[in-house]
Length: 166
Image (tube, rainbow, N blue to C red; front, top):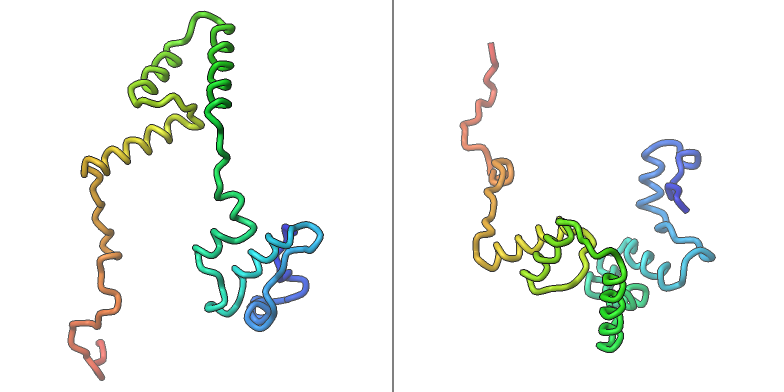
């Protein structure tokens, strides 16, 4: 765990490492340290035959990830009790609130939500992007010149076969 699967002390040069990757079996997770579901997930992702690898949708439904895809459900009673506890705690703390707390609360009320932010700056940026998309003002940036160049096109200049530069 935490080591390169093809260590340099065993495979003395890059070609022997590449040969082990191409010809050998893919690395596996240790049996005792990971669940069977996790080991099966990784083995599926590392399958050398592309047609046998699971699709993105299949990976999302895999036994190892499926429990993570179901959000925890909070009953309304639990939510109301938690809000009441927070309100009681807020009243129990100091009466004065800082300007930033007041500003944050007013912004949250303007947006019509009372959720807590993990990262306010990121949350406001995401909201701004969603608003721009909704308004149609989220413009696409022009591609860099190299991205717009037809890389598979042939040269339009005449060939100077046999010409020698003097």
